[in-house]
Image (cartoon, rainbow, N blue to C red; front, side, top):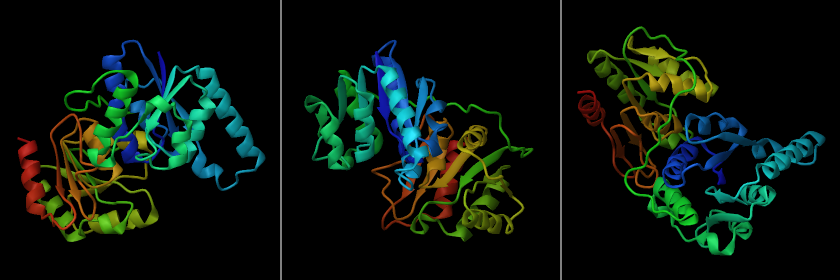
Length: 319
């Protein structure tokens, strides 16, 4: 069976969907799973040994110049790629109007997705096979919801804890020279940031446990933040700006991952590293830290997380 899974963005969402691929490998022996992903995140599905190939889209770029010759040519190549896949079924676990278009372009005889009442953007459901529209509420939690949709569409019941099985595909590009913790201190929204003083105190505490702290950044503002943090302690290493494949290699080599509610923290857990997630003004029940090793989600709306709580979890995981 040839199966096309659509979960194209964003980083954490794609990671939360990857247990679908391992479930399929368990319950549909011999299935070939391809994965539709936005070009910015093209490396992430390839971390799963259960994904055969990534089918890359560029809607975020195409919408800036929708009628240019370059956009039309790229869309035409995508359509050809999808049609040549000859998929038996498409699973759209993104649920957006643009992913509905991908379903249509694939031309598979069956397409599954969320019902009109639970899909993110209602036009997407128009492209699904009527008997394969499933009412699965977001309150289920992202990982459980995605696994349930695939199981209903393919005729199996996901059981047990989600299994990721991810592995880094490149050598570690950062030489720390000692055991280290990977810290994801930046987030997409300032409201989700954990106070800088607490990060500094945590890094000093981790230093006392024999661990240096590696810090990641992507934008100029994120770089300024990690450099500011690193200037306050000799326990931190600022990694260079890296793509997701290199970030995954650094995470895979860490003794422990600690992060705010951000994609890097979720990736660390999915790569099988002990992970502590710190939630500030986001919901740990809907998108908790989930992985193949020990993990915990701390904080959330109305609950302040102290560094002592984080350190206690680190000590417990590193025993």
